[in-house]
Length: 308
Image (cartoon, rainbow, N blue to C red):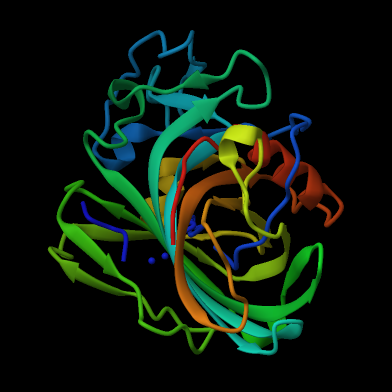
């Protein structure tokens, strides 16, 4: 599936699906505490019985709430990649922005907040083998810059929207980002290809979003990332299909961390940025103070290089 034109940053998730790019630079980071959530892969065409083991260890397999024996598996993170179109209006020092993001999930991770992280294989989760997950996100806000970098803040009053989809055929939907990001409360990314087997899993709107951008040049090899942004969403409104897949906890809150790598970033222009994105689900909405910890944890996990 050729999804990058969200051009997601995810989830965006996502959620590029996701949000504007900001950055947290530094070599040291602390592992945050990611809440555990449970999925039932067979609801999206994955395995009805989860095979034992995992890529880096044993996955936590359990019976599902509907009684399916060994049909559910735990995770605490959904990782992937995003592309976004960012449009800033104002001066190099201050202004407003609009962003459209497309996010494509690549893998579920369990124990991501420990040194024994367990990536779930496609034979366990079905992701990438029996189905794919992508998200579309649009939002707006303000930015303020100094010589040491820029700070971005999502403004929920400008409108925002997050949509998470399942694609039963993991290579037949294209996500086409707009040339210019406008109307932050509307999904401006268009979907083409075979949409008949795409199913909406859930929707949400942004509760808050924070991020900072370090001035270039940034080198990911040196432990830096040129951009990261964390968005906390209101409770995820699951569809009937989404509730069969995301089975615990309920309600779901989603936090989307975007991490980008690019050579330059001009806040008062339109540009396309790509990066990695992590989606974290929780039973309770995280407090704003936890956004920084999530972002710092992501900085240490980012390992991809992206150029404008």
